[in-house]
Every structure is written in C-alpha cells, then in structure tokens.
Length: 142
Length: 466
Image (cartoon, rainbow over all chains, first blue to last red; front, side, top):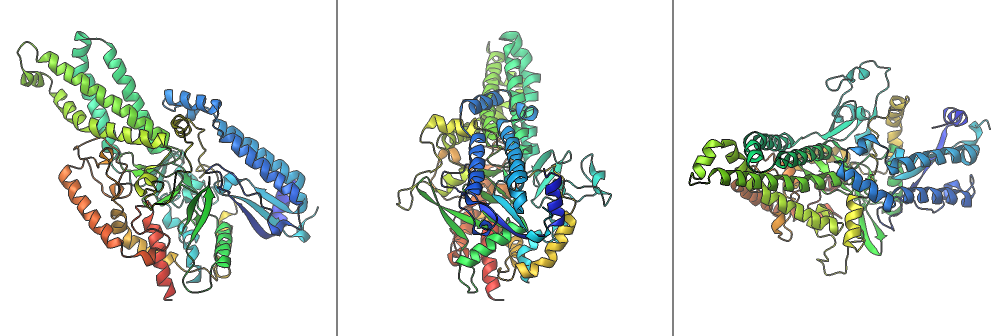
C-alpha cells in the first residue's frame, strides 16, 4: 500500500514510537475508534486534522456494518443460495474495506508522511487499533 | 524469566506452536516453504491450534471432533432414504419427494461444511508493540506490588457496564462478546460455543451458517422421518404388518432409529437458537446469565435492538464481516529479522511485566482437562438445552461449550452422559474455592477460556513467589 516516498521513509527512517488508538465500545460492538487525540502526536500533527481522519474512518466502518435494506437483501439472497454467493462475489463490507484502504493511503501520502507519521490500516491489526508509527525527524529526507 | 511474558511470540516458541510447519506435509502448495528465501504465507505461522488446507483457503480446528461422524450420519441416512424409500414413494405418492429430499440434503451438507471450514471470527493476537503498549498502560494505572493488578477494564455499552477481560494468550483486552476458546487457542468474536459436531468454534462469522445448518437439518430429519413412516405404513397395509414392511425395506429401520432420536434434539436445538437469535444473545452469555439480572441488579442485554425482527435480521442477515486473520497474506520480508530483533529487545520491554506465560503454559497443560470439564453449566434448566442423550443423534450441543468439546463423545448414550455430567459437577465444585486466584474471572463461569484465564491468574500467584 505504501508509495515510493512512504517506502523510503519506512526503510530509511527509524521508528521513534508507536501510538495505538483503541476501540471505543460505547455504542456496542460496531467498529468505532476513540477520537481522543493522543498527546504523543501533539508536536507532529494538527489535532483537528487527526480527529477528522479518525471520524471519517469511523463513518466508513459504520457504513460497512450498517443494517440497511441492502445488507438484508444480500443476507437473504445468500441464505437462499446456501451462502455460496459469499464465495463468488465481494460483499458490501469488503468493498468498503477497499475504500478505507484507499483513504488511509491518501491520508498517509498527503498529511501524515510529510510529518513523519504513518497510519496502519486497522484491518492489518484485526480491527483492534489504529497504529500510528512516529518516525524520527532527522532521518527524513523531505 | 523476564522475557517469558512474551514467550508466546518468542521466535523460538513460534515454530512448535504452529500446527503447520513450512515443510509440505499438507496442501498442494507445500513446496513454498522448502526454500529458505521463498515468501511464507501468514497461515504457516499462525499461532492458534488450527489446521489449514488448500494453501490457507480452508481453516479447521485442530480437533475435528465428531465432524466425520456428523457428515457420515447425514450421508448414510440420506443415502438409505434415496435407495430404499424414494422408489416406493415415487411410485405410490409423488416424485417431488426425492427432489425435496435432495435439495434439503445439499443444503444441509453445504451449510455444515461452511460452518466447519470457515474462520469463525478469530481475532489475531496482538503484535509485540501493541502488547507492550497495553502492558505499559496497565502498569501505569496499577500498583507496583508483586501481585499484578486485575486485568479487567470496564466500559459502558449502551448505558450498561460491561467488563472487558485481558487475554493472557492473545495479549489484549478482549472486545465485548469475545471469548478465548481453549480448544482452538484463539479469541473468537461473538463467541457462541465450540461445537464438536461441526469440529469448529461457532462465532460471529459462521453463526448464520450454523443456524441455517441446524434449521435445515431439522427439516431434513423431520422430512425423512415422515417419509419413512409413510413408506412403512403403506407397505404394512392390507394386513401385512410392520415386520413384513421392515423386512422388505431394512434400510428404513436404520433411518427410523436415527431420525427418531435426532429429530427431538435437533428441533429443540433449533428452537433454542431461534430464541437466542431473536434476543441477540450468544450461548455463552445465556449460560453465564450475563444479562439475566441474577444478582438482582437491573441488567439488560446492551446488544439487543429491543425488537425481535431487527435482532433476527441483524444476526442472520447482517453484513458479513471479513476474516481478520488474513491467512493467505504474505509475511513481510523482514519478519524473520523483526522477530530476532524483538528477541533482543525483550529484556528491556518486559522489565515490569509479571512473568506469567512460562508458568502459565505449564499450568495450562496440566489444568486444562479439569478446568474445562468443570465448566459444565449449572445454570437454569432448559429442556431444549439438555445434553443430547438420544443416542447417535446428529446434534450440535450448545450448552456444554467446552466440556462437550473436550469429550470425544461419539453419539453419547444417556448413561455415559449422566456419568460425565456427574464428574463435571464434582470438578466444578472443586474449582469454586479458588476465587482469590481467579481474580476478575468468576470462579464458576463456564467461560470458554477458563484454561488461559485461570491459568494466567494462577500463574500470577506463582510469579509472586519468584
């Protein structure tokens, strides 16, 4: 998922720290991350910007898990075909996950990499955390 | 001893822990692991007790339980039905009968295979960095004495207080409704139970397959039972008698026995799970009485949508969550370098961590059988949840999540079952007087992961003696 510049950063820069944004279970088991701004990122990124990123991610996950007519139709159709269609076609959730991956890559390229940060797609961490890697400033060539 | 907290993810521990070593004993693509430089897929280093086939496409629990028996019973009974009963019924009644039977049979087998071969919603274990971060948070809030702080976290879910427990094996706080299955050694989301009849855990991702399986199996058994009865009744007409009919069609006798004993338990099971689905409960929660308000407090299920129809839809027709373990993904090229680096870093990272894993591992292996057997629920009686005592019933048993899984009961007859239950209740009584060791884990909780939790806590007391 990393572009050439992100790859350079990963290879050349050394990791100073990692911050983990945990899940927020106030609304149940839906995938929702805490929007609280971690103190370690204060020097690197704008609080508004970060919270905006997390909020967008939360909205995307909510869209993926939304119980609406589309998901019901998909579910009923799948049941009638003994769930074989899950093997053939991409589910709504998977489509949204691709959107999320693209969004994270965009955010990394535009906003976070220039500041020496890297967001890891939560799906790579089992949807448990958003991992923010903080790279040491001096190693960056930007 | 300092780095034994991370023994689970220690590079030396990894290869023996994986059920699938890179050399190619299974799967057609096994040669991938032979060359040292060939990229490895994540399933090859998966730490849980699972087996993978078709290069990671198919996942099963290591203990397949009685899945072959389940499959065998279904296939044999249906085979006998098509051979012995269908010709007669087609001639005397209608040719729809084999069609309906065939459709139901196909449906049942497909849903059974999907339940068994699908990832139930396994949560991947925490990475070393995550685990270190959580440890740091715990140690910051806890005290500095030898005894580790209780590893629970309380969250408010829809105005209901829910305790999240720390999983010592997976090194993370379990999300709500997640439980650690000791048989599979994985945390499973929305854990229902470990079903030996399908040889897999039933969790978030395969619950709908499981429910469809038991409902269609109820229809199939009832259908075959009805057809066989009709067949024998027709044959016995004209004063010929039942014995004559049975002699003419011996297969029908076998079917009759199997179906008669299975139909009640399977119908009961379907009814029970329909109740669970309509109230958005899991078997695990129902057995533990998490939301029944047994302690007198005003508790209600925070996950329920308070509407039966919406509950059913959300459980059965909701969006299909993806598998989180990414079995077929490739390991990063620097993974081996990383794990070596982690090894050298461990002494510094694990300074304040209580050493539980090493002792825990030993304790777990020693204590798993009694602890798990003791988890036979002593909860409220429910006719539908009675253990299958219908002989060779094709019947997943929900109420004994771990204990049934531990017993390789093949069509447990009633006597054996009663004895096993007596043994379990004795062990449950033995387990009860250890509340101090269990800490946040309720002593009599038939949690699917008592082994890891209690083992972890028992290990902690051992650690305090170091």
